[in-house]
Picture 1 (tube, one colour):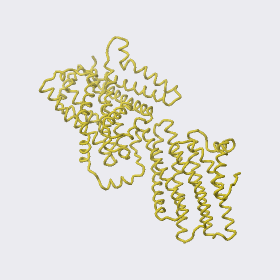
Picture 2 (cartoon, rainbow, N blue to C red):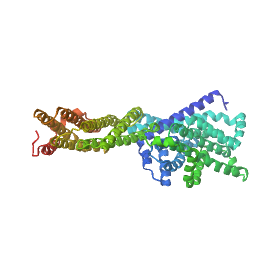
Picture 3 (tube, rainbow, N blue to C red):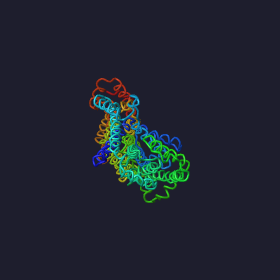
Picture 4 (cartoon, rainbow, N blue to C red):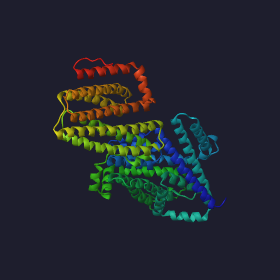
Length: 597
């Protein structure tokens, strides 16, 4: 038997590196494969703790990372997407879900001469899994198949790392020095501290369990030694949640606090029970040698038992977290002014970040719609309160644009699916149009305020003309914004015919205005204001066309120029819709039926 040397340490560290990298590759592939659907279910979470527990378990099993699950929860609470009370059931479920990894790793302990049993060993099937995964990555055309390939490669790397770690520590089985070191772990408090400290450093409970399972192959580790270490590594995995809670609001910090409380309370309850069973009752199993499966069993029992004991006291745990992390009045006030609820923590789960960004962009769209429609109403009658609201909304919309754009830039650098990439592109194009529409709303307010301050106003004929064109624009605004918020291509196709009508209406109104000036029916001062109003109205309509066009470009993969050329030249539906809109609005403008050319 070879002696344990520095080269075994190198192999052990190399195996750990393989393991951690494999976990990263596999969890990223799993997350992309699910497309964020499981995570997004969290946003619809109810107060039903059992449902929350099952969902937390399912998501953690799907993405194979309880740390990522907790970081996600911190981000959701910090963003206001979830309440603190909704997270505790998910935390319990996540703790149970993460135990699956230990069971997968226990395959390394499968032994036997039967070829079928031998194939269950990672050293036997990992190379084959890696080969299939690489072939899928290189040959597949669809992203989903490539993601499956990455999952397979990640899994093979994990198992290769596990084999390397097991081989590295195998010489310790006959080492007297190692036996002496292990006697220290007969102290359960030391076992908890070592497990927590080691896992806190590498920030992966799965890797800690894997190393523990590898060390179990020396035959020197008993159930009594391993159980406190398992409790400690469950506490140590909370370090990731603690790091993610830096710089977030109080409630988000409490999510990390709840995660730690569950682990610590579980240990404080179960460790004394295990010590009594071992020292007082002298249960023989604690002196037996533990293996791969034994560690997986203890890992599962600890988390399931903790859930059964503490789940009924969920509200008390939440209240305890509020006592530990007290409210800050100043922070509460500033949180009310949070614009979009976007959080950089969610960038660690790109699929969730994309959908959260879609939600924020939809909020921006609805606020922009409300703002411009109020501005159009102002042209028919001055309202100081409405003016102030429009200006206030425009500041908020500017904030939306800044935050969403910077967030989208960061998000575009992440590993996202093709569909998510198109969503990011669509949002990048549209938020600028939303912001420009709000700018035009403020320009309209300034024109109205100027007339109010100077005590001048448009004639009844002019107001009638403005009413017609603003009604047409309001209809187009609703079509454009509905098509964006609902991802409705059919409605998007109806925007351009109406935009053409608005352009023609604007030209007609300018000609009428020139005639009024020539006949001294309008002052030059009012003329300038009227021209400014028409210019801003035209720009608003143009931006509506841009929004609808962006949807068509992104989803139909056709440039806006090519689309407009095709429909105007060849699309009978476009011409019919244009003719209907033109007849409706020109009839209202002229008081009789006017056939549009």
